[in-house]
Structures are given as structure tokens and as C-alpha cells.
Image (cartoon, rainbow, N blue to C red; front, side):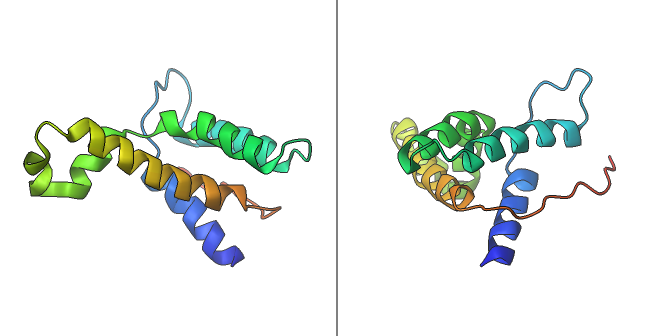
Length: 119
């Protein structure tokens, strides 16, 4: 279970992390900041499960380019959704967002190592 959680967390942060303005920060520094925010939410015993989920959503959801992810998911069928794109993007973001928040919310005390950065 922990290996799966670690793998999902790694994929989450490495593959789906939307670009943010990187004035003087390296990608690793950006990830470290986000991971620290997430860990502070997850490890705080004062937060109820619902508070934890909401705080994780507020932290993580803006980091994704949900429109682009939805387009890539539908591929050539994106044009079939003409006029309903916003509805699909909202449902897509809700589904994946809940999945990510649930998985990350179950994270407990695994060690996160940043070993090397190459660009």
C-alpha cells in the first residue's frame, strides 16, 4: 500500500504538476514548497478529515491545467463535446481532484527524498 501511495504521489507531482512562474526557483524548489504545504495539512492532527480534504483541494487544484488535461484525455473526441467543454472539464477536475486528494490525504510518514535535478 505504501509503495503504491509513494508511486502515485511521485507521478502526481512529477507528471501533472502544472507550470508556475519560476522567477528564481528551480523545479525541485517549487515541488518542495508544495510538498511541505501538503505535509503540513496531512500531519496536522487538529484538522478533521473534511477540513484536511478541503485544505488539500485549495492547495493542489490550482496547480493543474484542467482544461489541457481534459483535452488530452478526450483526444480527437474533444470536438464532440463542443458547447459542453466547461461541463466536462468541471466533472473531470472533480473526479481526478477527489481521487488525488483522497490518495494524498491517506499519506502518513513516508519519507520523501529529492535526489537530483536535471533539466
